[in-house]
Amino acid sequence: MKVIDHFKELDSSVFPIVTSGTFDGVHSGHLKILEGLVHQARAHGGESVVITYWPHPRFVLGKGSSSLKLLSTFEEKVKLLNEIGIDYLLKVRFSKEFSELSPEAFVQKVLLKGLKAKKFIIGYDHRFGKNQIGDIDFLKKNNVRFGLEIEEISRLDIDQVGISSTNIRQALMAGDVITAQGYLGRYYSLSGIVTRGDQIGRKIGFPTANLFISESYKLIPSDGVYAIFVYLGLQRFEGMLNIGWRPTVKGKKRTIEAHLFDFNKDIYGSHLRVELVAIIRKEIEFDHLNDLKQQLIKDKFATQTLLGKVNTNK
Image 1: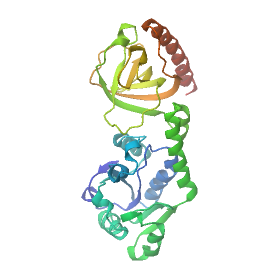
Image 2 (image 1 turned 120 degrees about the vertical axis):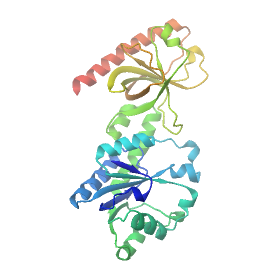
Image 3 (image 1 turned 135 degrees about the horizontal axis):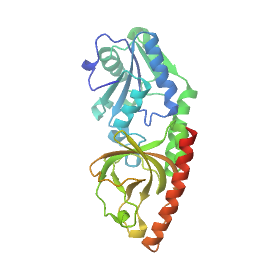
C-alpha cells in the first residue's frame, strides 16, 4: 500500500475506486466495506483508494475532542489497511478551511480532479462538505453530471460499524479486552518506546519496561494487570502488563509497565508492541512490597497458564 499526501502521488494509470472515512481501529465491522472495495477494484482492473482525514475531524472542529480516544494511531491504521490489501491511502490534512468546502467542491476537487475517481462507495448516512450537507442523495442526483458511479453501503453494514466501535471502546474502558478482541478480530495492542522508570520492579524480581505512548489520543484500557504478548523487533515474548497508578508505591502518574518473562536485557529506547490477551485482575494496593511480590508471583502463574492455553489452541 502506498500512503500519499497529495493527488500528484497517485499513479496516472490507476482506475480509482474510492471510499472515505476515519476507519478507527480498522475492526471487523469495517472489513466488509474495505474488503469489498479491494475486490471491486481488482475486478475492474483498478486500484482501491481509501481517503482518511488527519487530524481526526473532531480534534479540529472541537466536537467532544477533549474526551475523544481513538482505537488506533495513524501508524497502526496504515499497517492494518496494508494487511487488507488497500492500494492507496490518501491522508487528507483536515483543517477548518477544508471543512468549509461545499459538497460540490469536495466532489470536484477531491474525487474528480484530484483522484479521477471512477466509483465512490459511501455509507447511507455519510455526510460531507460544509455543515455536512452533502449526502448520498446529493451524489445520486448528480452522478450523471459528475460521471461518477455511486454505491451505497447499507444501513445494516454501517450500523454494524457503529455498534462495533462503541462496544470496543466500552469493553476496553472496562478492561474487557476479550470482548474487544471479538469485535476487532485481533488483540488490542499498544505501542511505544521503553523509558527509564524508578526500577522498583527490579528490586522485587519483576523488572518492567515502562512504555511511553506519545499519542495522547490513544485509548488506554482500564487499570489492571493483563496477560500479553510482547513484540520486540521480530521476537515475540510472553509477559504481563500493569496499567495504573501503582498505589502500593504511592505512584503520582498513570504508567504502562510490561514484564517480559525470562527476559532481562537493557532495552531502553527500544520500540515495543504489546497485545492484550486478557485481564488477570484489577489494580490493588498492598501494605508492603513483599505482599505485591507474592501477588505478582500468582499473576505470573495465572498469565503463563492462560497464554499456554492460547498457544495450544492456535
